[in-house]
Image: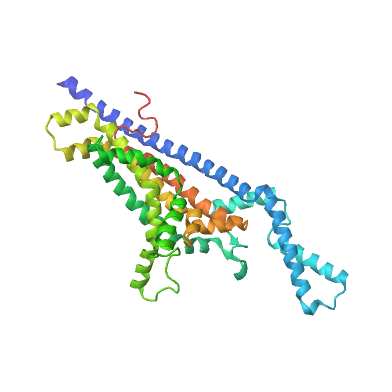
Length: 378
């Protein structure tokens, strides 16, 4: 008894040291992950800046636009008609210098690229110079906040509904392996190879041009209804064709993909053991089939939510949907670098945050997942 009493504090000390070691391990792992992702985000943003500016070639395009615009303004200004050709040329050159200095074009692109990078990292998205040329420059932040809700309404609603519907149908399909419904899904899954905008053109031709039962595009009728209920109903009507196009692109492959995972896990030995014990089919599916697939499904859902923020440029262009994707497409055509970089910054930060949080979510839903090097010494 005396010996056991003397030895009793040892497990307490060991447990305390183990707890402190676990906290240090998780803290170290979080710090390394944050530094790694921050470095990755910075590299990705700088490459985006270089690509969006074509390595500095966009500066030459802007200089030419500035020169042409100022020349037209001086030539069309009647108050300057009395100037001699030399004076007019000097005035044009002076205005060009002022405008290039205002836009920062008087400095080398390499130096300005690092300034763009710092602005992007600090979320100082700047102004759009060309996409709002008729109304003057405008803050990119305001442009994003204005167009983002339209993208979230369309892609958020349709993709989230499709995600859970296809998950349920895939689980149902795994119970009926080899049925005609199963063979139909397997046969039609290659339909997802065609992009969603292709199906968009297809459904527009059928339901808008031929049957004339649904609108060609846009978000609401023109002019927009004043009543909120009518406005909402008009938006829902305009969302039918885009949602249908997204469904045709995703539904069969998503069902086939999830059904494959469910079939793999439903053939495990522990599932057969649970069935042999007489557990209800619903409980077997919930505990022994759905739960092991949670990390995969959570990952798919998380990246689906990230993709919703960016929209789809060509898809929104086909349906004339005033979202962030269409805005990015227009900005790319106008070489409006701040808008392109601004949308990329949002996506990059969301992606990095999601990847960081997923590690901890995996550990919560799956006890086999260890954070850091917890399982490396075993």
